[in-house]
Amino acid sequence: MKQNPKQRLRGWAVFLSLIITVSMTFGMTAYAKTKGNDFVSRYVTVNEKQMHVVLYGEVNETGQEFADQNKATLVMLPALGVMSPHIYFKPLAEALEERFNIVIVEPLGYGLSDVTAVDRTVENINEELDKALEELNIDRCILLVHSISGVYGLNYVLEYSDKVEGFIAIDNTVYDKELEEALAMEQAYMKQAVKEFDDLRNTFASVEEFKKALAENPEEYGAELPAITGYTYSERDREEFLQAYSLCCNESISSEVDHMDAALGTIVGKKFPDSLPVLTMVSGDNAAAIPAWETAHRDQLNLETGKHEIHVVEGNHYIWYTNLTGVVNHIKDWADKNQF
Image (cartoon, rainbow, N blue to C red; front, side, top):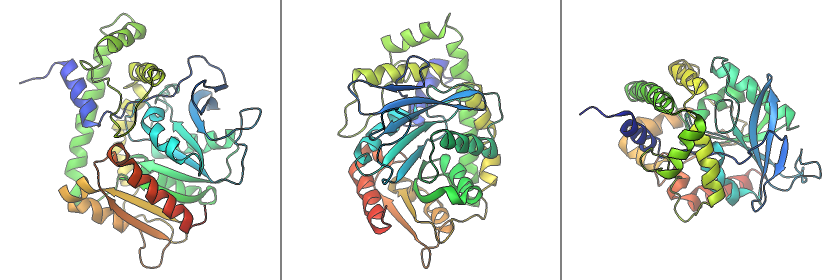
């Protein structure tokens, strides 16, 4: 039976495990300490566009930099199509902020960042990330990636090697011949879903009217907050989540989906440098369902003589949703071993 746009929208949200979140700033201020939350919301200018980033950790008086420069900086990059990187990463950021200075990046087209018409190629996305880090005066960092951002992250490591001192991959997207069919199906599904989401939004008189409908009946539109075991989002989180949700599936995301197969082609045969500390966590559910998924992750690493390690961790693609403690413990243990 053919699904109507609302049903497909809800199905897509489930397909993406409801990875929809956004960081809270309802003005165009460059810096705002959000009351009642221990994070700083900022915009940085990248190619004349405003990119939204969220900082967890103590900042200096200006709100422009972290106060403790001796702590390693962890930069979190989202999966493809995440409506609000901030909310989806927020439980993980809060669990790690005592150990690291944390930056959650909402790339252009995501969350509260501006939309861009620039093609969403690996090269362009990584150039924008690099400019954002420069604006934040971050010279070196640990990249934490999830899903498709693992493709961008591996390329970033090889292109900007002097700027990355560690790498954490949470069920990152990998290439293997055996995975081609599944990834092609995902790309086709997402192309259609993005278009139908935008078509549905356009049936409303304005984005504000669409947001109002989302708030009144989130289940109908697949706009529920992510379900994180042991974590409760606030009403403030819900408001910013709905703001981000109402803006998602724009031309930037559509372009990124279109470039998905080309992006995968950029990592064929590539491996992480032996000297770079790398922690890879693979979803136990995915490893059990598709053995090639784990094998392809191992193929990116040198587990014999490199500073690399891999763990199959219980949970689905969004491992920290149901196993936050397990993910955090692996990260802290790895950081201890590598003196971060």
